[in-house]
Amino acid sequence: MYHVFLFFLLVACSQMQSASVTKVHAKIKQPEASKSYYDKVREKYSRYKMVELDVIRKTKIKALDKTRETELFVFISEKGQLRLETKQEPKSLTILNAERALVIDEPDPFFGGPVRVLIAKNPELKNSQAFLRVIFGHGDLNKFYKIKNKAKDSIQLEAVNDRLAVKEVKVTFDLSNMNISQIDYTDVQGNEVSLVIRSTQFKKQSEPKLFNFEIPKDAEITEV
Image (tube, rainbow, N blue to C red; front, side):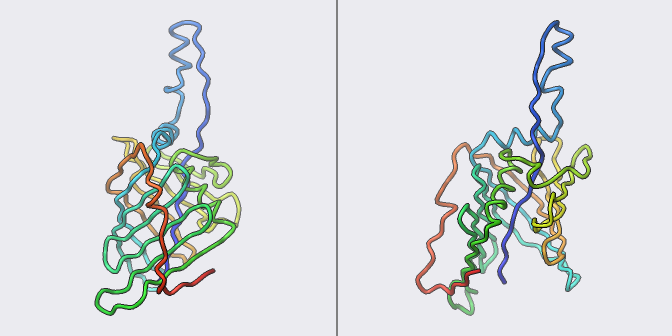
């Protein structure tokens, strides 16, 4: 089965001006005191070239009323490139960049067979790339989602138009370290998906090779 995963947005960053007339006035206008928690999380992620995540994806399959768990490695660059790789065999790999999405399914080690590759060239892929950039501190939130609700440790976003595959997404934060801890949404098939982030590594350098894949000559290719 092919799976194309898109990530979602976090929050918009509002610019605050500092003013200092007296020491007391400076405290009132101090930018750090004025910024929301969500702004601070967004700024933290924006300082890094790449983020590496260790994730458990929990999918409640609507048609079967069952929940399936998959362990993943996820890499996201400041340019919005995505690499999503399952830990279990047979491995499945999703790579998203500005030009296309690739979904690569390795053959079952027991049964064998060719590598299966889905190539998707969709005009909305650039928007998908922008989603990823915004959640990690780059891009304009308001262009894609609006804030529907927010609590101390979470924010709920709603799509600004019907073209977006994911209509609503909830992002939960770990208040102890200002990291994103979970992302919840409903996919296009109506399945409820939770991305539980077990660990986050912030990288000062990106690794372009992670977001490229050389398709084997004998691969079974499907283009959409």
